[in-house]
Image 1: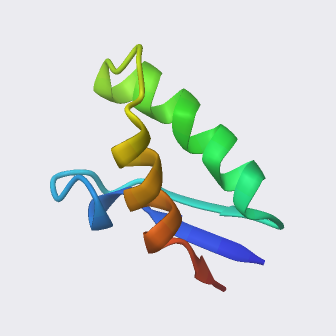
Image 2 (image 1 turned 180 degrees about the vertical axis):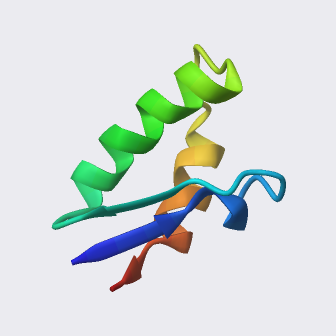
Length: 57
């Protein structure tokens, strides 16, 4: 199982995600970034930061 804490990239955010794969984490985080952070276009540098912060739960 994989886990990502949005606060590792956006310090003021307490949202966490758990999913079996990195790709499923990234899909959930993309929706969260759009809906909760107002990002309609997610830069590749942000995707790289998220990938680097994904941990095995």
